[in-house]
Image (cartoon, rainbow, N blue to C red; front, top):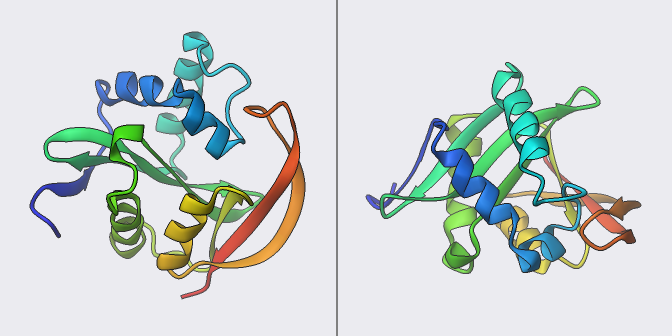
Length: 160
């Protein structure tokens, strides 16, 4: 593990950074399937309390050079494990998401198969998943709050 990059348990102070990260319009456009109103602090707090209190959720904060860069987590969707991650915009394009996802899958959630969903046109996130051994298994359409329209979403699977 690089000395300046690691995963740790989420602490209360991380939530403010996560909230600020989700306010970025470009990040919301890329992620597409986001909260209806990313600026709603009450909804954000309720959502994160639910995540943190759910024993089936495994969540880690991504630390880069002593700063909170983002988060990586797994949860159950229709009885199947899925992963999700979010990085602050200033951390994009540095290999941090790929490293964090690989580390998470090796040390924190070894369930296989495991799934991920991404907007079809989110090439950066698709590339992270592919570098971590995920393959596209299906495409579907879904309503993307950040874009206020239905878009194509890819379902990825990692078998090993």
